[in-house]
Image (cartoon, rainbow, N blue to C red; front, side, top):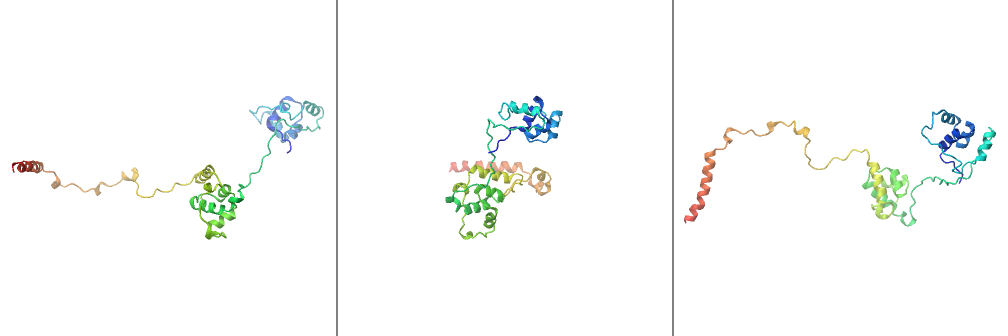
Length: 230
């Protein structure tokens, strides 16, 4: 793995402030443009960035700095760093064990049916498949479509529940929530404008007759007394 300079801009800040190296030398060593190094020296760039001493990190020796200061055409050489920077690996499709690859179409069918909001790229990340395979299964053009049965990829061990929930959450973000099924209460803005004419008006005949009510109560009270006399 090629040796890589740690924090190039912070290193450039330190070299500008603490050495007599030219802008071209610092730019070449820190893989920056000479104009960017000049902007650092003028205070127009890298404001607030604390300088990083490359000698302390072991990426540049004092002898190299001295050689560069003595000869403006000298190109500084990067020393073996004391800190190993891991190489960035390009993330490829999820690896699926051979024993579980036969279950992938069933898992894809389950995802397509139960989570139609998922994009092909998300399904591909979850179960490690290709977009063409997802298309074939979605359009029922897969060679084994007749025998496929939807199966939860988490149960099959093709992905974790956390990964599935994460992808579903990303796909659902920004979507309009589905309308609730069944009868629901009307919003207040609608009920406030309802006309009161729909209510049947009470007529004068419907007024309660107090004498009739008391007479009815008296008759009900008298019945049990008559039964006791018998």
